[in-house]
Amino acid sequence: MTFSPTSASTSPMTVADLVRSQPAAVRILQRLGIDFCCGGKKPLADACADVGVATEALLAEVTAAGQTVTLNWSTLPPSALCDTLESRFHAPLAEELPRLRAMAQRVLLVHGHKDPERLEGIADAVDALIADLVPHMRDEEAELFPMIRQGRRADAAALLAGLEEEHEAVGAILKQLRHLTDAFAPPPGACGTWRALYQGLAELEAETHEHIHVENNVLFQGLA
Ligand SMILES: [Fe+2]
Ligand SMILES: [Fe+2]
Image 1 (tube, helix red, strand yellow):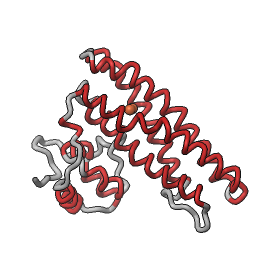
Image 2 (cartoon, helix red, strand yellow; image 1 turned 180 degrees about the vertical axis):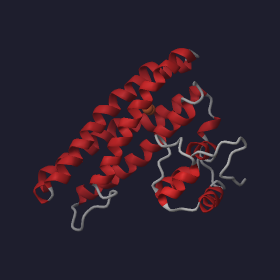
Image 3 (tube, helix red, strand yellow; image 1 turned 90 degrees about the horizontal axis):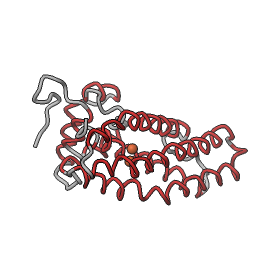
Image 4 (cartoon, helix red, strand yellow; image 1 turned 45 degrees about the vertical axis):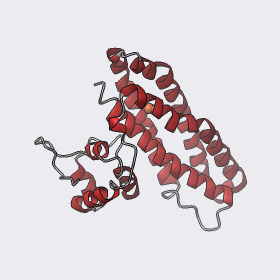
């Protein structure tokens, strides 16, 4: 299957259109630094131009990557989507977020004097991310997902604008973390915890981008 930068309709293909039709695009867009969750409504051609990549080259790479098997979120019915979102993205964070916070505090305590502004900023951003993400996921699990499973579409749709706003806030904190960590590149001589923290934050960014993409562009689209 090959792709054209324009969809069947007259409107240009957006980043979200590409990821919905080709889940294998996720890893490629992440590598290129193209935002596909909160920035998913942007035309693909514009997003490619922003990072200096030819749209046709990107589409060719996505087509090649699509030959391997990737979970296609768009084919899951809404209740199965909720189950998979919970098991794939929500549940692992119960352990991962405290682990990241502990590492950020440890690095600040031990190495804070070497780069106080940066390390305090990272520890604060991790705290802010947890303060936003934990109640957000709790609300999805306690309110949104049960409404979807019970087929209460109108009730669920009424929550979407607020949840999308919270996704934007999480996306902004992840951007700040990327900036503060020089794109998750540890400085020369960084200790093992420092390196593990950056590695963990890079993985958190990738997972959270996909998590938000599936909610905004697949689950919520099906309710709007
Ligand atoms: Fe979620
Ligand atoms: Fe969410």
